[in-house]
Image (cartoon, rainbow, N blue to C red; front, side, top):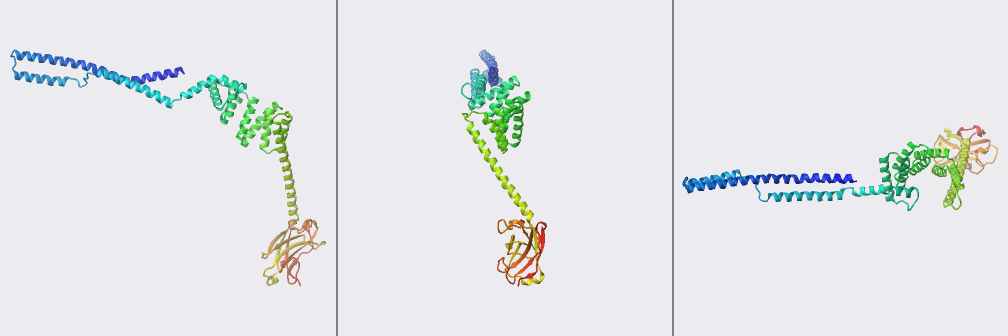
Length: 426
């Protein structure tokens, strides 16, 4: 700090010299000029005396005397320096002092407005209070550090590391302070420094995992899980590592692993602990999620079984109309395609009803087309397929309607069938 102020003073003196020297140099030149002019004036007066003496002794007449005087005056004017000034010496000193004072005042004002004196004071304050900050942050002595004090603590730690080189404790403290300030990049860089010096530093591995979890990406969670696994390999009962792994599992919806980790934490706590109720509530929530997933899986499994059953019982039927009955089609007929049991109730097992159709047409019968619950296509072994064009939109047969039937078919062996409408109901 002293060196900085000495440098400022030297630079200021140098600037003052640049301002004052031109005036002082001019003063010396003007002083020399003034002395030379005085000698010329003295010689002028001496010659005037000699001319007056010659005129008195009648060695020259009045006309020559006047011409000689005029000539002396002209020569004096030509030889006198134009820099002559009666008050030049005093004026130049005033100019030099005024310019120097202005320069110093301008420099002070400019530095006050734009300089970093406040930052320098904060830096010196941070360095002076570094031990006290360390005690309050690490030893939990006194009041917790405020946001501004945390920033000053980080500044002091960076300065110490720059001056003294790598220090594991200082790097670790800087990383934790950076976490408190939400400076996650600085925290990761600090923890990386520690792990280069000591790859098995468990407190740093745990703190580093916290930083990665705060950033929240899947890549960071995977990296954090690897660090925590390394900690638990050396210390299987480390509750900090277990709690972080529980959070990772919870975020990934790995409910079983999350439940196991939270149960370990709960068993290690006293019921009076303020965190006990929160963790117990979290376990209950996880159990509900597990139950919901199991229910969803059962529903999905049942749906898959139903779909499989539908696909197993499905029969693809291609219906066509015999050419001789083309002119007998009703104008607003309804096409019914259905299957009945060969030996069983008359109720259709599966029905498809179409009001908009043209031949040939392809339909599919399956258990999803059942009319009565429990009476499905897959519930019988032998079936008869029927296609009927109804005039009154009723599935019951009526005189004049067109129909086509299959022979008795083995349902399990029938996946596709070509059905021809070739009968007129009498």
